[in-house]
Each structure stands twice: as C-alpha cells, then as structure tokens.
Image (cartoon, rainbow, N blue to C red; front, top):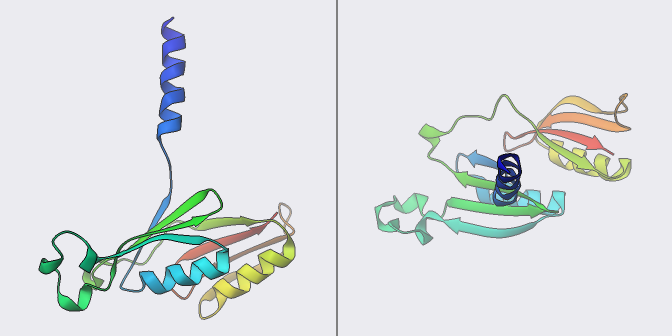
Length: 149
C-alpha cells in the first residue's frame, strides 16, 4: 500500500508541475517577444508592464512601459520573459533554447530569421542526429539550437 501511495503522489506531482524557460532582457522584452511570436508561430498571452503592476507609482517613469511579465505560447509550451534593470541584467550563458521543428525548410526559415542581426555559432547543417541543426545567438542575446526533425 505504501508503494501505491508513493506512486499516486508522484503522479499527482507530475500533473501539478510545469517547467518553462524564463528569459530576462535589459529593456527589450516586448520587442523580443513580438519577434518570437512572428518567427516561432506562437501567441503572446500576456505582456504586462511595470506601470500596470501593483506599486507602479514607485517605479521610475521611464521604466513603467517595460515588461514585468510576458508569456508566449508556442504549441503546448510557454516561454516567459521580463525586463530587468540594466544594472541587474546578465547575458544568458550556460544554456540554449532547443527548438525542434518539423521539416528542413521550416528549420531553415526559423534559423535564418533568428540569426538576423545575431551571431551564428554553427551554421544550419546536416548532422548524424538531424537533417538540419544549427546554433546561434539572436539579436536579443538569447542562445538557440535549432533542430530540424
């Protein structure tokens, strides 16, 4: 009976948890999320500014239009984001957002759109695991791995 309870508890926990990437930007979150919405074929569900949040009167006027919380839905997944004060911002490092895409043509389209004004670390190419895989950092400083499936 104890084993069954443990199994049920783990099953319940799995259904009550979610994992999502939360990106920070030095004041460019809205531009990044509008770009990602177009390129990735997602839908922005929320763009809330600091000025729309509780305590907004304590936020510097020039910062009130910046994003305190953004949600972009791509398929069944969420990408979250926010602007942080430039003095608290750190460039992303130590990870990549891996975006798996059906079809080589679509992988090429997304890769080239994300690479515009960014830097390509590995051009999109055939690998032993993918017909189209590439690595880049986009114009907003976000590292991506594109994997054509």
